[in-house]
Length: 149
Image (cartoon, rainbow, N blue to C red; front, side, top):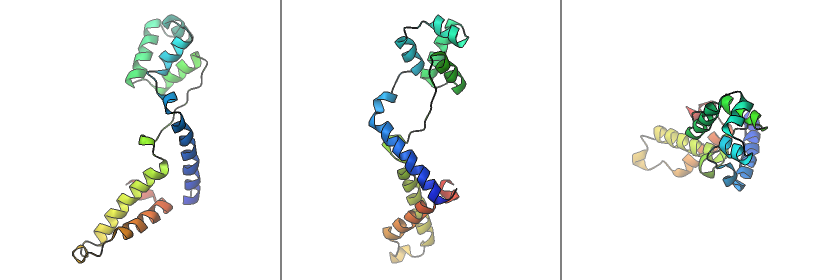
């Protein structure tokens, strides 16, 4: 995939994230399985029967979800039992966009490159933030594979 295609994908993902950030509280929960089980007024026994596990295991499934130790396979089974589809998504931290994450990384790399290349010129004060900004912009636009090394 070339840089242009990458940027198209990035912009499409960032648009989807804007929709998610518009309703952030919707995604906050203390466990989807428990929330949905209670909304359906379903007992552990009933949930367990739908999944094919015993009531104690159904309760344990909810506990593992809260702890973050549940498998995607187990979540998929619970979703199916509740008549739901399981979706998962990676969301940029702090409401950032993918583009902002890339910019931050490109700037850091550009800063390292300029400082290394101008180590002898530091005494002459020839290193400018403009050089770093220009290089960061070029790195960002090219999306080289070594961006994450």
